[in-house]
Length: 199
Image (cartoon, rainbow, N blue to C red; front, side):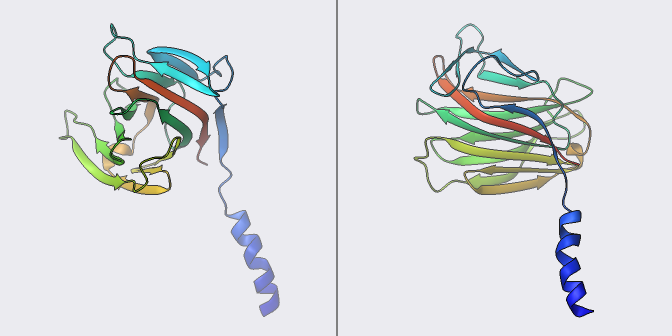
């Protein structure tokens, strides 16, 4: 009986694993963009095995890739590279019912600092909910995973993970945005993007 229980245990573990659904894959190496993504701000092209965004002076906005699939109970993975120093990155997702920020994280590659932020709203003050620090600052391609699951938002950059929980995150989300740059002419590269829905 004990032996049977030992044999059944692995089967139970595998049967309880979540079968997540991949909704979007973009390696960034060749055009066109897959359905579900668009170049939203900046001047973009394909080259060096990635999507390359450059800030446009007249836009006064970071180079941006917009995800058209709602970031609601999702896991998003990608790699990104910053060609010039003193750049920054901002991930934004909007609530489904408005165009205000709902859930953000920011990252400064030069310092290795990143943070999960609750944006200011009419109901709550804005707040930094969690902070992370990379120790290795000379990484060429940063590997990012961010996950939204109810009130929880988790961000991992190059293996360093931070998590924050806030009741304002536990609502349907709208589109998401990958924003990179910081000054006119700054180049922000993205590749190997994958969006997975949590079951």
